[in-house]
Every structure is written in C-alpha cells, then in structure tokens.
Length: 235
Length: 163
Image (cartoon, rainbow over all chains, first blue to last red; front, side):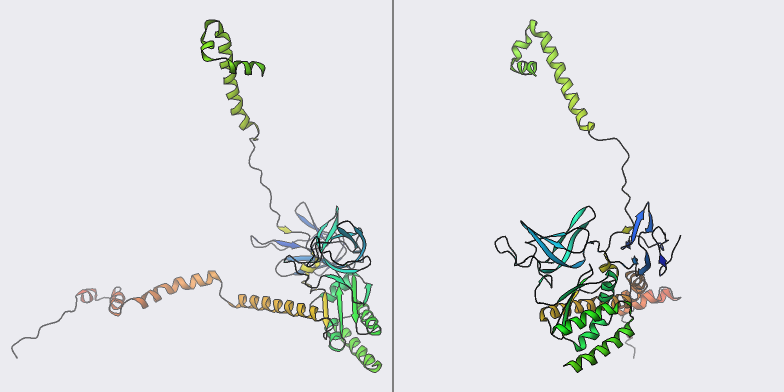
C-alpha cells in the first residue's frame, strides 16, 4: 500500500518520495529500508518528514537498537582487559575502551568501576557486531560524556518518550527548570538519569517525566504548575 | 631451470663453436619465449570488460533519530545544579542560534545566479562611470544622429585681428 507523510504505516508499505534536485541526497532514517531502489517501511508508526529531504518513522518502541551517533546511558558490568562491557539495553552489551575517556592514557587509567553509570556516544553500531562506545568527541573533550557519579536516580522509559523530551519543542524540562534545581542525562536507549536537590524532588522529577509521555505541551505546563505548588508547600 | 643456469655460464666463444650451434639456437628460442611471456603477463591480469559502473545511491541510509528529529543534547542542568553542563548547554544554544541566523541570512540574501544576472545588466552602466566625461559624451552620441559633428575635434579658434 502506498502511504503519505503523516499517515500511519505498517511494515511492507511503500511510498513515493518527491523527486529531488540533482546532487541532493534523500536522508532515510530509522524505520525505512531500501529494497531494489524502492523505499519500504519496516516499522509500524507514523511517517515523518523534515525539510529538505529527511524521512523517518516515528514509532513506539521499548527495545533499543544501537545506532551510530546516539548518546546513551549505560551501566558498566564487566572489566575485560582493556575494555569495559557496558549494558546499554540492546541485544548485546557494548564495549567501551578505557582509552576513550577524557585525559586517559595507557598509564593514567580512568576511574571506572563495575556498576557505574556512563553517558556515552555510540561510535560503531553494526547488526553483526557488538556496539562500541566512546566518552569523548573527536577533539578528545568529554563535553558532558563520561561517568556519572553524583547520586541521582536512573530509570527506564520508552524510546518514544526520550525522543519527545529531547525534541526542541518539548517544554517539560524548561518548565520544571524554572522552579526546580535539577540535572538530567537522557539516553537514546530509553534510560533517564535524574538528580535533584533532595530525594523527594528527584522522585518528583522522575514521575513528572514518566507522566508526560502522552501529554501535549499545554497539559505538561499545567502539570508543572501543580507540581510547583506542591513543592513550595513542602518547603 | 638447470639448463638456464648452465647456459648462462657458457661463454659466447664456446657457443660460437660448431658443435654448440644446437644449444645456442635453443637458448635463443628460450629467451624469445620469455620475452613473449613477459608481454602476456601484463595483460593477463586485466580483464577486458566494459567499465563497471557503481550506481551511486540517492539515499543516505541508517541515520539516527538524533539527526532526523534534530534532537537536543541529552544532558541538561537547571538553576545551577551542574555548572559544567550548563556551560555546555549555553555553547550548544549559541551554536544553534548562529546556525539559525546563518540560514535566515541565506534566505534573505541574493543567490549567486541572481547576482550574476543583475551584475551583467549593470556592467554597461558601471563601465560608463569609469570613463572620462568627454569620452562618455561621445559614447552616448554613437547611436545619435549627429555623428559627424561629434567626431570633429574642438579646437581653439583664433580671433581675427581686424577688431
């Protein structure tokens, strides 16, 4: 069946893309695959489009499939020689070299223990190989990547919610940030780490994030207002 | 190989002797064959096929959601909870604004093709500006009627001494 942008799609559907000017490539995102020159849909969801030529499927998903360039929250599970095994929620554990931390050298090993939470970038993602993570960018700076070790709370959500939170149009974090002092690390693998001033506030943040999954921006704002009132009474 | 090595050791003078004629011929033949083999070798490895064209795909595949949806950086901090993260956030925001303004500028500015078109029509006007005034006048008159008058050079006319 042929589908258009904005429609609900099922795996196996096809769609015609508007022809482009020469030298411009059509960006084909997750949920779409090429079969003999045709683009077919391989995920159930909604077909999305962005200027100038980007197509992808917006789907609800809980299982993370590693993708190159994603920022993920992982848990270190094992030390094997030069690498750490990191659980990122995908089918296989990812590997993280001890040299791919900021300021790490062969002699100066980073201080990473089993059970630590790391915020890392997926460098290699291949369906036939295990994923490889790094905690530095191409300049060797950490830029917020690395071990997160200041308390807080880690919880799992759907991948759809994570994308919603990180969308520039989402107001949840900005609105909460007006009243609460908190920080978050949101991984594309559905793991969210939150830390606020107190444990109660941290739990509040986590609940607010999880509750916002099926809300629109107006509803989110009203919820935040209510939360602020309750929080001010508690203090 | 053994014959080859022995033949190399035989001197020219020996080969010229009558009873060595047969082996001299053989050695020559072998050498010819070797040369031929060398010529073949170079061609041997190249397949004589029409150029294989790799079809360049029009699709950029396997992009992440981060790119497709233009997602923000995943670490955020509010009200000074983590100053390092807030610094990074600020830098990222600035980058974004710069990008947006650059795009806006691109939208408002004249494209290269338009510029070239406009400039080519202006060329005559601008060139005129750099000409000397008198020259310009003549240039203007070229398509006028009184060509001959313009071409006669103005010169000083001596007043008559009668008065």
